[in-house]
Length: 198
Image (cartoon, rainbow, N blue to C red):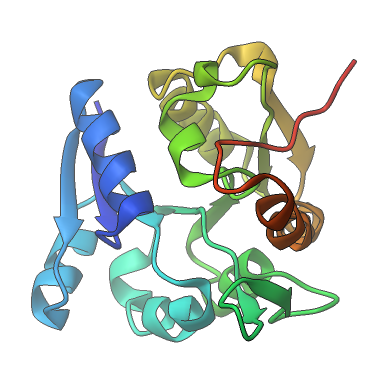
C-alpha cells in the first residue's frame, strides 16, 4: 500500500482522501501549518496536489526538497476566473500547471490526472450514465503505473483510463476546463466528465 499525502482538504482533496482511505491506503491530509505539511510530504510516497491551481506552483516549489523522488499527482486546474467565479481562461496558456510543476521540480515525478470532471466523479466514476475517461500525462512510465493503480482503487476501470503520453500532453487535459463554465451554466452542477467515445 502507498503512503499518500493529500495537499488540500476541500471537496476535491477531502473526497480523494476519504476514498483512498476506504480502499486501504494510509492517507494524511496536510494541514495549513508549513512544518506539518513538510513533514507529511517528506514521509509520503505519493503526494496529491488538490490545492487551488492558481497558487499551486508557488506552494509546491517551496516543498522542493521534500518532494524530491516523490510521485506528485496533480489534479488541479490553474485558471483565471471570471466575474461569476467560474474559469474564464488558463493561467498558463501554451503550457500547463503540470508542465510548470515538472520544470520547477525536476527531481519529482509529476503525473496529471482527474482534472477533466466534476469533483464527485473522481471517486465515483460509475455514477455517470456513460463511462467517463481519466487521462494520464507524465514522463515516467512507472509513476503513471502507480497512479493508474490508485485510479483503479477509486473505482476506475482500466479501459476508462487513457495514457496521453508525456507531461506536455497535460495542456490538452487542462484545456478541457474551458468547457466547464459553459456546461455548468447549461446544465447546473450535475456530475459530468470528459469522455472519449470509441
